[in-house]
Image (cartoon, rainbow, N blue to C red):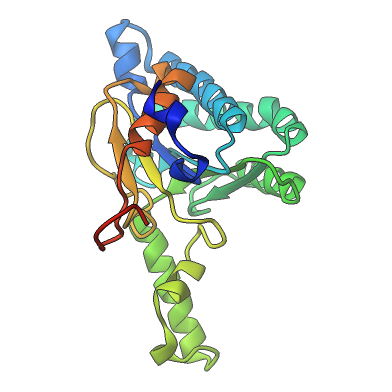
Length: 245
């Protein structure tokens, strides 16, 4: 019996966050255009969202496009924007039917008006759903998110609506893009890289990390179960000692 199969439900993560990495390397290894790697990565997104729904993971966050990704070649950025449009157009109705609650976190600068309208439509349509909470980090940067929170907190304090002495970790969490979503218990990064890359910096303070050599286009339900199995074997102390908190 695997660790996952023998684990109690409380040992499984409530929130899984994934840094989806390896689309370009997957395409390069097959001597294919990069855009086909991103297409394959989108199929993996659908497979993992379905798997998380079937397994019963309440919260899933996917790092789809960072604020630094604008530095890539214009053609590749255009392809990625097109894939996002296609994902929302083709998958939104099905996700809504399954009860998925969809939200997007990240900046709105540099994003075309038609995409912003689609993101808002997806959020509004699914906001009352009670199934899987799916968060897509798009045009997102963890440091930018903290800067936004600090500015908002400073504005509240300046206006006299917030006592600076009362600011604590809960206050800051409430001003982040992820407000209302529990911090990730498990962060997975595919493709063998071992870094956060500006993803959920504040929220991942006590997360467990699983780094897998699997390239994102090949990440599927089995790979997700393997990561969950590894998570189930971890003892989470949150800075303390003894049994799992």
